[in-house]
Amino acid sequence: MSSLRHILKYLRSTTDRGITFKGNEQQELIGYSDSDFASGRTDRISILGHVFMLAGGPVSWMSKKQKSVATSTMDAEYMAMCSAAKQSQWLALVLREIGLASAIGESKFKPTIKEGTRFLIGSPTLVRGDNQAALTLARDAQITDRSKHIDVAYHYQRDLIKRGRLQVEFIGTSDMIADGLTKPLTKGPFERFLRLLGMTH
Image: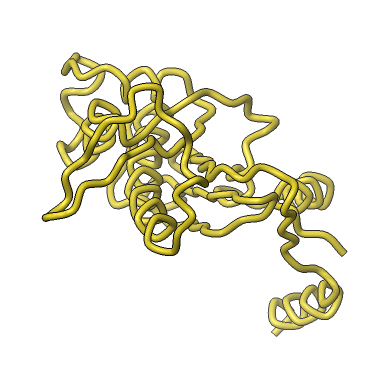
């Protein structure tokens, strides 16, 4: 009962908060992918989170337990990035369908991608992560001792990168917007998380 009261109190105190989109800010779709490591108290399964920002506000976000146990922080972050990569491709399709292909990052090579009977000029969607080892693994198509145990399904992102449909880059943890989706936050970090999301009073 006390938990319910706490939730209701929080909802009442945030009725004036909302997502603000700004036409003069970041017109490129950018994803942020993050994961904690082994936070599940009984099953040791990690929590992944990703958020996609456009025009200064979030247009897609998710937080959920991963499907299997990660054996390292790199594994957890790599699996989270695969989830974000899948979402990035769906969002890219939606943006093209509604005439907002300009919101997808520019590609130097402008690869032509055949999808069914239609041809699309594909630009890679951008996903940022804060784990250098996971980013390196995503860019490197080689199977090594560090990656041979990872389920093949999580290597989907490698294929997207190879085909020019996904770009990944590093961002510092202090600027990782998805960080707030993977763990409980105290008041200060939580307020900062809301500011990064563009949720203003």
